[in-house]
Length: 136
Image 1 (cartoon, rainbow, N blue to C red):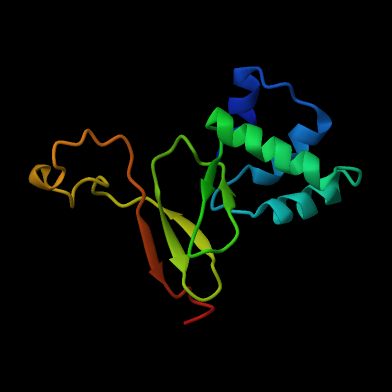
Image 2: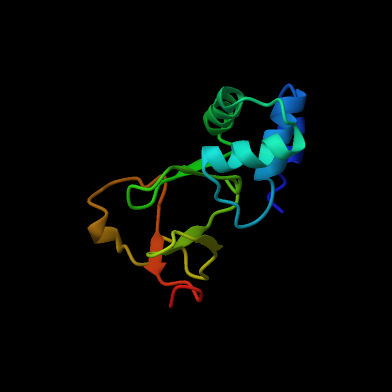
């Protein structure tokens, strides 16, 4: 589990019923939902939740650093609740399925010091692409 709800409670995020439902929908592993998918799932739990409320809650979660926006090949942004556990993504080039992966080598292992051009690297985004079993 991503422990998103615990992290938000620990930060004192005002947990309205709408915000709680959005966080519940996002909580878990390999969760990479679009805003519309979050809205559909949240509406199953709280039918009166509006699309605008979902978008606002997602924006707040991104601003807080508790959720990360993931963009792949011009598709709709997806929201990843595993913001505090370093990981990379494996993306199906056909259907867009995204899985979190945790390679054993650090993300900078393939970037020698002389190729960093004096940069102090603060983050790395690596995306592996291929076909998922259903599309292969």
